[in-house]
Length: 294
Image (cartoon, rainbow, N blue to C red):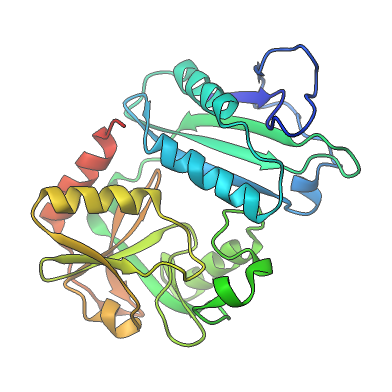
């Protein structure tokens, strides 16, 4: 089952599509809804968030909304009306049939070229089954992202750190991983700094410390990573941010790619070199993330 909620006025800084109409309306997700002139389709000019829903409750909702607004500012999109988006998300989730795991995806585009009304919708559906990958893990390859680790400061116009609809590169690296008989990718900067996965945040463990790449690297502010750190701290582990190279990953005691929906996927191999999986910690962590209510 899928649910689609289309926002009437995604931003208070722009006109409503239908003045006086409700904040959103439900529509048929299987029927055409988007104009062929919408800049989200023709230019990838928009942003999105994917929110995990565990036992009917959106996870890290406020963090996702803050990141959504930050991405909009980076792209100079009209500021999202977070109250309207929150209402639409909760309504879409409530319409779903009961399931242990679902998700809600928010999308905001600049709208039809030449118009001044952005397009916004929430799509909610049951999640794929990731139970196997959470146990068996993923094989990753390290790929050069093609720019230095300080790109966020030196070239902000490249939109590093924003969650945009321009996903051609992320799809291309997935195909490259498959060609190399791997499941996923960890990006490395051109000057040799670990970054993130195409759709995930990298977390590694060294002894009793959980680490993730440092801030200011042009990577996403990980919503799931923040909750992973909260869980780790509740278990007596230390957490931190680190500017590190590939050796930190290949030499780690354990590592994960963490994201909404898939949650924590342990890394079992890096460029063909085996890496140990902490099955007990991974299982407990995923149980925590799945049941989290905020």
